Length: 496
Ligand code: C2O
Ligand code: CU
Ligand code: CU
Image 1 (cartoon, helix red, strand yellow):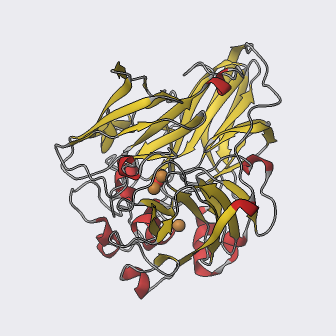
Image 2 (image 1 turned 90 degrees about the vertical axis):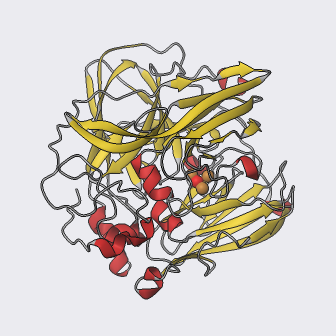
Image 3 (image 1 turned 60 degrees about the vertical axis):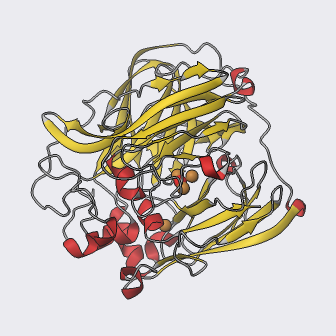
């Protein structure tokens, strides 16, 4: 994949703030040897919590650890209730939750419920800091449809490195409407999570992070693909109809997924829940922060690789020096293998209709808000205002947008920079109205909380800010390339 030949030492590490000697940057010696498709795909533990006084209670602990990504090499890492990544939290629409999050690490962190509709003070963004030794216990209700959400660290200026080390996990929401469809839903059997992350390692097994100027500009990419924390794993398929819940949990890499034999996948869900009907695809583009649920059919003796194919849309690779960097990064590579010996038949076929997806009419919008994403290289970047929204780099003391409770709004997101940015809004799910004035593809016509905006593109979304208002505690909107978020491509809104 990517060779790390041009390395600018030390100078580029600055913003990460070396509170802990977590990693070493820029080592050029040989990497640990990797054999592909040998390690079995790990299935994360699934937690249903304990019911206490009508509340579903989870206990989570943020911890440092050492994880064996490679045989006999321990990588200093971080995780939730474990040494890399965290459990799948299983919740249900109507649940009242309490989540006790204890920080056992020696640096401050936060835990954000990405995609979940909740009060700002429970959101786990950069204002809800959990200091070392402290426990934070947010309480909130689940009032949104069945979906695959996730959680991750969101510490101001430290999100990227903390997530890179492993502070992330999945958060499932179930509901009656989804149950009635009899989709594949036996966890770990015909319903499995795939958390995709690319990582870079040094020869001693330690993570390599932010070793080059490019890492800082385009975000941190690696040449080792982890799925649920295992490098290039293999999964033995048990059932003919498999539901794969895919999270792009990478810091910066955009995937264009396909199977090596070109087989079709049926996308059944976007970030915010099920689509109106399955959408047949041969390729699926997924940007950092986005989720997609797909259903794939397997036959006896199948042996197929899930891989990345460079993005077909090449505005991104043609614009200037950044475009060249992006292009060099975007090589084809393999991710994991699926093997089916004698898969068992599915209990029921995939329904042709799924759910009614919530939507809003443009005429009901109280206003249109404009968001312009930009990045500048050179001195502006070094001085911390190179990554901006509407010309401003994130300031945690500044509220950027004030939104009236209950309002339907259109946000027009324009990307004036030379590379794509996945734009994410906290608290709400939205629908994509158009991309450069064109209707979005069918598999994007569902609820979303993150949308990829290509270089030069304008995307309009529509949503409603409801139920929770708080003049003092903001939610975030930002680029989900985590290095961009940390470098300033983030803003704050309050609902009042
Ligand atoms: Cu995935 Cu602001 O978060
Ligand atoms: Cu979020
Ligand atoms: Cu970005």
